[in-house]
Length: 104
Image (cartoon, rainbow, N blue to C red; front, side):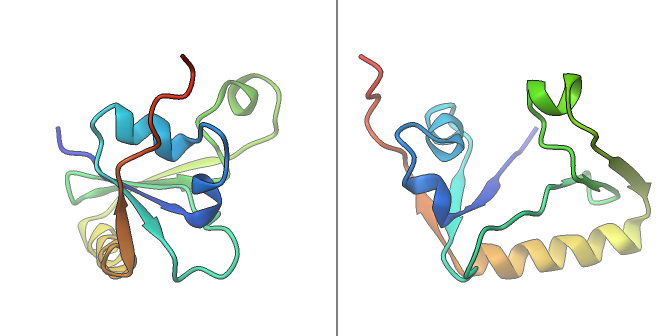
């Protein structure tokens, strides 16, 4: 399985953020500085044919407490369009290697 993640710049200011977590797990992590606010998209593109999107944050709170939505779309053409958009944002992003493990 190949995974990469793009996050917005708000993830580099937290003490230990999602960007640090994913980078330290060996997942290529990129920060998109082209977004003026936060990147509030939650999108997964799987095998170039499935798109998972919605408000769901993939957190315990989203699963247990919040009113969230999740949409699974199986459509290669739509997945291609989402992937092209992702690649445009990836081109505007910089790789993030993570802060040193500051929990020690």
